[in-house]
Image (tube, rainbow, N blue to C red; front, side, top):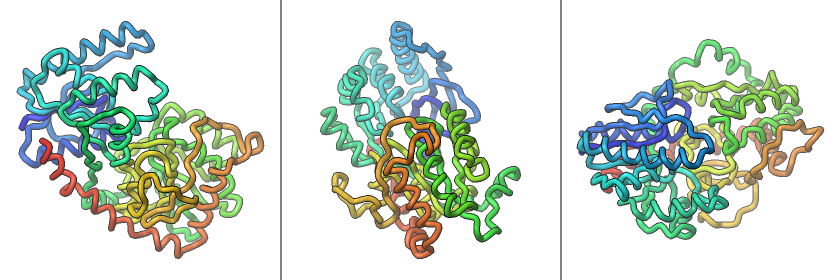
Amino acid sequence: MKILILLDSLAVGGGAERISATLGDELSQKGNNIQYLTFWDKNPKYNFEGEYHTLDCQNSNNNIIKRGYDFWKNSRSIKKLCKELGIETLISVGENANFHAVLSKTLFGNSSQIIISQHINPLIHINSKLKVQMINFFYNRADKTVCVSKEIEKLLNNNFDIKNTTTIYNMIDIEKINKLSQESIVEADEKLMNKTIESLFNFINLGSLYQQKGQWFLIRSFRKVIKKHPEARLFIMGEGPLKEELENLIKKLDLKKNVYLMGNRENVFPYLKNSDCFVFSSLWEGFPMTIMEALSLNLPIISTDCMTGPREALCPELNLKEEITYPYYGEYGILTHPFTNELIFQDIEEVPLNSSEELIADLMIEIIEDPKIREKYSKGSEIAQNFHKDKIIKKWETIL
């Protein structure tokens, strides 16, 4: 089958980009002809199997007329490319790609099967009437809407009246992750993550430096952690527009010897392997790859109970809407109270830690001090098998 995967970019650092590259690789190995089309040509790219194309779009900023014209023009280009390449199925990843994929069919007559995918909680756009209307209009006109978690599927069903949904979790290659985790850390980082000193304890967070990821809460909370454990360290891996504000916050809190913004690394798995606990601070999600990857390496996990994903991945014993008391010590990870959606870049003398920040700090202290807790949550590879690529690709083959 000739398949085109449409997404914003294939740049290293993004979860959707990594998911798309992995999906394409697995479908290619099943004998499919895989092509990629991106809106932006960003480097470096994840390694991928197949041919690459780009629309190389320009930023139209807030000019609504220009944005509307680009939407029309790009959708027409997508249909044209599908026809030229003989594409039988178009898989779009992310809301921007989803809207374009469906418009290429409804307005320009794209004859390819259109499978769109929702990778994030759609309710974060509930205050945007235009975005709500677009989801309502476009998603039901796709041949299938793939959701990366059951909770996302229910939200689309109940809040947007989308009928053509199914859930297929993101996939991980557990064998590949374990192999890559054995590689060396970048030489410049080796001293920072030195595990030969017994008193050192490494926390790690993976995520782009955007508001969604909530890393300023972790940094502020870490001030409390190092009062009891001054040699504890927090490594944040990712790039993004909040980098300068986060760097300034680290300086304000006098944490330059404890908190490190590491930037992007193409192979993050040796960093996970050399860490003692994965801390997840997102305000909202889809079904986070980073949690699945940490599980596959048996790393203890502390995570916000944000919508959507962490509860579904770490606590299969819970119903999605079940009321719980925080902290919740689940089967495969610890859930902590979600953070509020507000930017706080003041030190804790100016703005004291809120109750959610206090709680995650206390949990980080507990995981340092209690080896029994660490041992209990070092069995994540058991549930990680549910997301193994061999299981997930069969579900994709079924709808294809």
